[in-house]
Image (cartoon, rainbow, N blue to C red):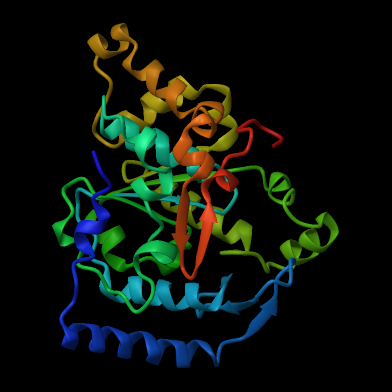
Length: 290
């Protein structure tokens, strides 16, 4: 099964393209007036979203476009993580659970199968028509709960949130500098605790709509958590499937060591916003403490 998102990226008419560019340009001008803060790597400057969280300027623009132009369906499944929380793993597990038997992982990277809304879909002056995507639409984002489209809560669609011990988020950067920014609440899509607590509170109020998982639980009992995840989104593993080992095969195929050996994840690339990344940067050891 090829990724379905490109189906929604059909060429726009000249009038549509001009209208969408005007929307983005107006928002860019607005974002330029927002407060800013340096990030720990000094590679770019964060902008502060009106709802109180930080990300790169174009990410704020995309989040605002998504808020205004994405309408959630009852059948949608939103996956949400804070960066560096097991995002790639969650994408592969949930995609594989929904598409039993499909050999997608060998041909497409996880970020092609389930692209990020704010860095791969609603970018480059594009407001795609996602109505052509078949149900259930699997949608991925890092956006905090308070900044999602109202239709996400109103539609009753499923939301799966995965969090991780924040101490494990500093490895790629200088620990002291990253820790200082993190404690100040300045981090990508942070403050961290507001991000986590927003989805935790939503989960406690509406547990049938929002599933709250931890990376540590997923690592300790991957098979059990996969079964729980599949049941939550409405595609439980039947007894016959469990006897045939369908769920176990998915766990094995989605293990980081299995994914990292695939050619598409060794030498393939993924475009995000205005950069191209080699896929192998998305695959770490996939163990607690990594």
